Length: 497
Image: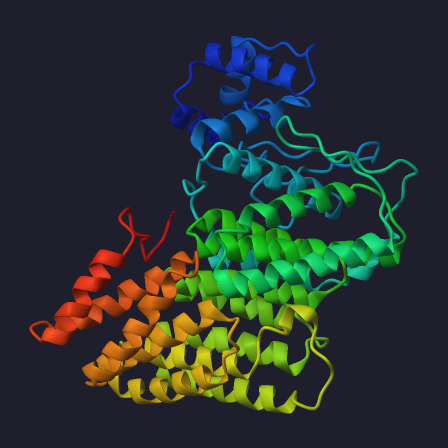
C-alpha cells in the first residue's frame, strides 16, 4: 500500500459512475462468474484501492479490468487501473527492489504473453457485445521511443539465460473466457504461419474491418500457447507468429478507426518480435505506429518513433526493410513541410530498394513492400508536401502513375490510395478533369473494402474540390462524394482518441 491515491483507478471509477458499494458487489459477482466464488470484497476495501493506493491480490485486478472494459466500452488493462502486474509464479523478487510504474515500458519479458492474452481477451469481449474501443488517449511517440530505446537495443538472446521452470507459465486469461494452453509442434507452427499469410492477403485486398476479430482471436490463442515452455526453435517461431498477428491486429484496428487499440497492438508486436530475437520485425512494428501518427496529424511523434524503428532494427534489416522505413520517415517530414529533408530521405529509400533487387529474400512480412509500394509511398509524400509547396504535385502525379501501373490486382486498398493521391495532386496542380477521373475510380472501388482510412483520404481530397466549385463536372463529383461518405462522427486529424 503506497498511502497515496490511485489516480488512474480513481479517474476510471469516476467515468464508470459506480458507487464504491456497487463496485464491490460487481467484483464479487464477476469473480464468481470467472471461477472464484470464494472472493469477497466490500466498500471499505474498494475505498482503500482508490484512496490509499492498495493493490488487491489476484484475481481482483483481472476482475476489475473486465468490469471496466465492459462498462466503458474500451479495453482496460491491469496497467490502466494503476496496478503493477504480478510477476511469474514462483519467481523470486530481489529484496528491496522498487516496482515499476504500470505506465513504464517495456514490461518484463515474462509478462508479454500475459499482456497479449489479457488485451486480446478484452478486445474480443468488446467485439462480442458490439462495443468499440476508442475512448482512450494515444501515447506520444516520444514517450514510447524514450521508454523503449535501451530495451530494444539489448540482445534478446540473453533472455534465453533466464531461469526455467518445470511447470508451464500461467496463461493469465482475461474476463470469463479461459483458453486452455497446450504445447505445440512444428506442424502447428506451419499452419499458424500459413494463416498469417491468408489474413495478410485479405487485409491488403479488402481492408481490416471484416477479418479483425478473426485475427484477434487467433492472436489470443497464440498467447495461450506461449504460456508453455517449448524448445527454443519452436518458441521463437511462435513469438514470430505472435508478432505478425499483433501487427495485423494493430493495422486492422487502425484501418477501422480504433486508434488506441491499434497502438497497443503495435507495442505488443514490438515486444513479441524482440522476444523472438527478430529486431527488424520489432522495428517494422514500430514503423506501423509511426504511420498511424502521420495519418492522424502527428508527424513529430511519427519521427520520434521512426528514429527508434530505424536504429532498433539493427544490422540484420535487409535493404528493402530500411527502404520502407525511409519512406515513412519521408512522409512525416513532408507533413511537417520539410521538403529538403523529405527529398533526401526518399533518395536514400530509392538507393536502398535498388540495392536489394539482387539481395537476400525478404522476410515474409516485407513481401507486400514492392516497387509499386515504393512509388505509392513516394506519391503520398509528395502529395502531402504539395499542401505546403504546390509545385510538388507534379512529382506526386508521376509516382502515383507508376504505382498504378505496377499494382497487383489483389491490392485493392493500395490502389484506392493511389487513385486518391493522383486525384489530389491533379486538383492541386490545376487539372480538375484528370482529378475527376481518378476520384471517380476511387469512389467506385471503395465499396469493395472495409477500410475507414480510404474514407479519411477521400475527405482530404474532397476539401480540394472546393476551389473548383461552380464547375458542373466537379459539382456533380462533390455531390456524389457527399452522398457516399459514411454518416457519423469523423476521425479527428489531431487525434487524442
